[in-house]
Length: 208
Image (tube, rainbow, N blue to C red; front, side, top):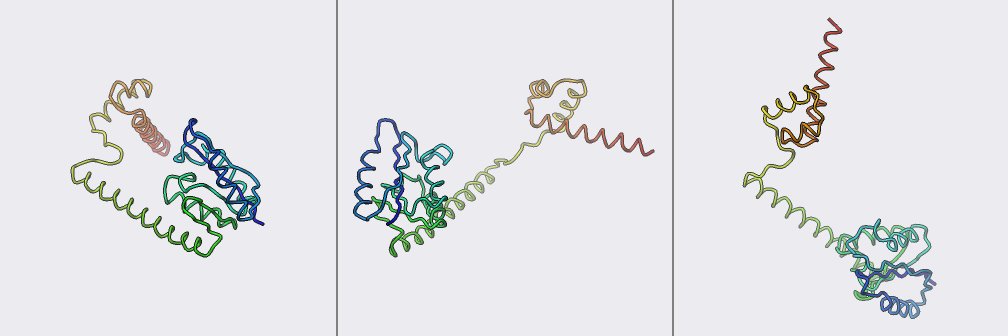
């Protein structure tokens, strides 16, 4: 007899998980599974990460402790919002010897057909990642063709000189940033560079 963990989730406080629990309980009874625990995330979006979904986090911990043999959820969107999320979840739980049942999609990875579907999902997930990477690369290429610069903007020599002078005058990093229109991070980098140059100068004098 398989130990089953039910995972139920709804996105808003106006919704309820009771219907999901009722349907999955019926499925478990017919399949002969023993429900060991119901893991619930009420009023939490599926786009949230594991750290913001306590029920989901508790479910994965139970799977890792091998307290659950099969996870049952009403639909794939209860677990996550993308195919990549589903495949990652499946890979994680199956590495612990745990299967997955999705009621709405009629997926049961404890069966040969369910395992075959899982393999197909992995292929489609990789295809999805490649499409995303391709779109990102194409977008970057179009932006560069239009003259868009990526990375840290290069400060002009005049701007660097003004920052260095203000720092030598004893002004704080924030005051220099405001006065010269430079980010505090850039001012900090220039100050570190000035300190390094000064240390090198003192070291060279010491060896004379």
